[in-house]
Image (tube, rainbow, N blue to C red; front, side):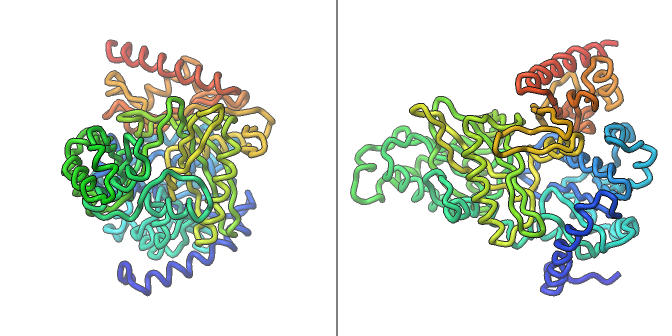
Length: 517
């Protein structure tokens, strides 16, 4: 087949034509559970390769969107799911047996699993595009392109090319708009939306720009002790670094000209920067910054602070809404690395999140964004109040996306922004603790089958009747990397927390026992 030139005007025009199908598709198909439809799932982490290499078991993160298999509960829905490596049959069976109201035997024929058989560091979408036969197999698995769409982890020009070759639209952010979700673009949107953000500078290009921006921040606030330096396209906190002003000469800070302070900062950067990724040096980080560009902003201080996140959705009809809030669980240097989340966010500041999230969503809708996305915040308890500032926009699916989707699909519930509580269709309140980073050396060698046996034998498995229990993901990373993800659902936040700790205790005990057997 003769394809349009990658990135050409003709390809972009054809993509725009496909995207104009989404509103009608949304109205005709998305709202009718009996409508025939096909969802092509491309769970590619199309991100910077160097940054992605820091993620242990990155290829298995393609499994996080297996939550979409829950859409097979719609009796005439078909799913085409493509991965770099074949999925273990037991993992697929695990999800199919979670389907509410649909026998797995009915769902399985409507699921097409395709694989590149390629474990390389190339993005999944890149692997697919280089395999014309695989592209043809995906096309053949779509009965009616007019009732089909593609869903992805994030949308780049690669995904746009694939959509055009498949002849179906993407329900996701147009790649021409993804700059709005960069660190620099986020700050611009926050200002446009009237949402508070840390003092800082964006669209910085190199170490010289960084030094001038840091000097400007210090001159505006002489008490400032630390500042953040962030790559525009860093993710999970691994593209961040912290600069400390310790030792900055007071005379340079007070001087009328910034030259002396800029000079001191420029010389101090190699020794005063701490990269969140400990494998990075200032030199390697500065090289990436020169290629990727980024921002500098004041470090948000506080003895009591949280890192909440708001999930929003702008549907194909341009209707924007807040759909969930989470408190993110962070670790690593200066607590910059995403480890997991709890749902929903603390009600003490949830109302701030709802309001700010709605403002950002409306601003992005006006820019043409049609997608799920998340906005990350920092909130600090000071003088008897929570003070919330916006940190970044993630115009993609992220660590809080798949646990919330899984809960939605299993319980048919809704998050109520008036109360900050989620209730299932049966009226049960639902809370959860989720992580992608449950890792232990003793888990290495465990198979998905062994994991499922442990869960069932220790009463951890999700119970549809009570709408509580544990669901696992990233199970493919378990045997080789000793890593998996969990979603622990309870009737209260305390129940979910206890269930998570019980799960860790059981897995630690049973993994040692299995290895010794």
